[in-house]
Image (tube, rainbow, N blue to C red; front, side, top):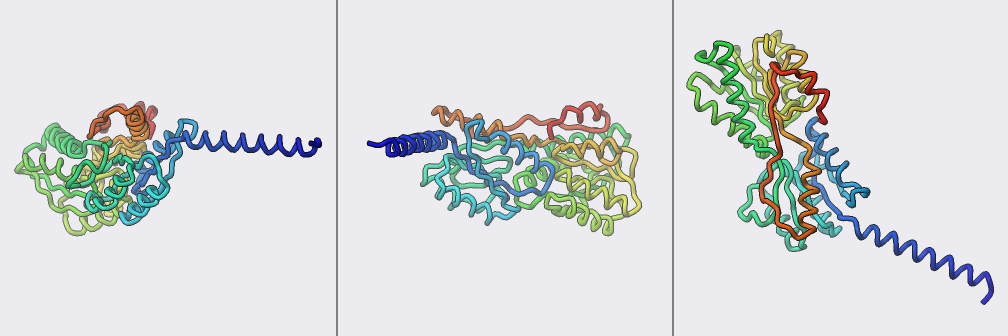
Length: 326
C-alpha cells in the first residue's frame, strides 16, 4: 500500500472518529422545546432570558425556543414541531388556560414530559403535564388588595367610598384569572369599595394606556387603578398625566401593578406608581432542577410556587433596585 493511500485512510479514519465524537456529544445534550407566550412585557423578556441563559450547551442542553406572539394556535404548532423533532422535554407558558387536551395527548403518546411555566392550564386530566412552576396569582391579588386596605387606613381613608378600576391582563390567562380573583376577594370584604369597571389591557403598555383613557372619559371620580402588570401601569400613568390628573403617593389616583420589573422601581422612585406586587420571572433554574430530577428517575411536586414579595414607596427602593436581576 503506497503512502498516498495510507494517508487517505488515516485522514478518513480521523474524520470518522471526529464525526462520531461530535454526534455522541450532541446526543448527550438534553433537548428542551420552549413554547413562550411572546414578548409583550418586560417581565416576559426577563423570563425568556432566564431560560436562554439556563438551557445552554455548556449546561448540557439544547434549547429550541419558539415565540408564539400571544397566539395559542402558534403555540400548538410549536408543540407539534417539538414532538416531530423528538425533543426530550416540552416547556409551555400557555397563552390561555383551555384548549390544550389534544396536543398534550399527542406529547404524552410520544412519551415526552410536559412542564408548564408561569401560566396554568384548565384540564380534565392533569396527568397530561408533569408539573407547573410559577407564581401564586390569587395570593398576589389578595396581597395587593390587603396592601390597599392598609394604605387607605393609614391615610385616614378607611371609611371613605373608594372607586376602583382594573386594567386586566389577557383574558383567560392564569395571571389574569388569579389576580382578578385575588383582588376581588378583598374588595368583597369592603362595602365602601366599588369596582367601577374592568377591561383587558392585554398586558401591554399601549393597550393599558388606551383602556385608562377610556376609563377617564367614563368616570370622573377614580380613586384607584389596579393594573395586572407593570407595563399596563406605565400606559395608565401616561393616560392619567395626559388628562391633567396626577398619580402616585401625592397624586389624585393610586396606581398599583404586578410583576415588579426594574422599570416599576423607576416609576415608584419618580413618584408615579404606589406599589408593585412581585411575580418572579426567573423560572429557568427551577425548571432545569426539575428536569435533572426527572432524568434521575425522581418524583417531583406537581405544583411549585416561586418566592415573591411586594414593594412600595415607603421602602428604600434605590437600594433594592441596585440588586434586582430583572
